[in-house]
Each structure stands twice: as C-alpha cells, then as structure tokens.
Length: 147
Image (cartoon, rainbow, N blue to C red; front, side, top):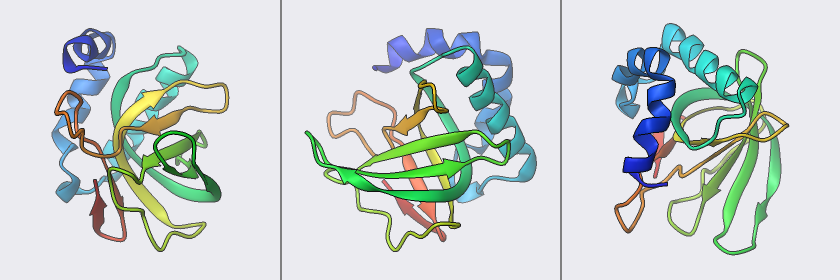
C-alpha cells in the first residue's frame, strides 16, 4: 500500500499511533511503555479486523516455520507479544537478509505492516522497498537490524 493510502488508515488510530511514533527509530529499542502501547495498537487492530497499518513492537519467538517458497521467498516465524497476541512474521529474504541464527524464545523487534487474520495477524514489509513506494520496515534481533 502506498503512503497516500496509508495515512487515512493511520488517522483512525491517530491518538494511539501518534503518541507511539517517536520511538520508531530502531536505535532506540522498545522501552516497556512503548511496548505496552504497541501491544494495545496491535490488539485494537486485531479486534477491529484492521489491516494495512504500520506498526512497531517486539515479541518472543514461539515457533520457527518453513520458508514460504511461492513467489518471493519469506522467512516465517511466530512471535508472542507480552499481551499474549501472536503474530506471524513474513520476512522477505529476497529483499533483506535472513534473521540468523534464530531460535525459539529469542526476542525480535519489528517495524512493518500489519495485516489482520483470525490467528492474530501477519507482519510483513519488514524490509526496504526497492521501488521506494512503501515505508521501509525492519527486524531487530540481538542488536542487529535486518532490512
């Protein structure tokens, strides 16, 4: 989704998203208050079945899944947020380096686009857009940024 289409969606979440925006720099990490606010934004998006919103957060890896090999290859794993919500991370390894080594119980921070599904949601666009039309995302694992 391009940025022009993204802003009206963010307007729906403006009170919570805008106060959460200052920590979007990966260098700042995710303090507990920001993490709680991120979990609240993701919880609301899940309850409201909202998709196509840029989000930041972090969670614990609960399961490593096989790569998705259809179309662009994606590294896939499940994260559990502190709130208990689970997210599927779909990280495009054709456009960004694979997060490795990655194990269950590792903590991963993310900045990407949330898509609703009945299991908690999917985070994708965790990389740069080579065409420059989408907000650049990232994953952070053990102080290394993957984008």
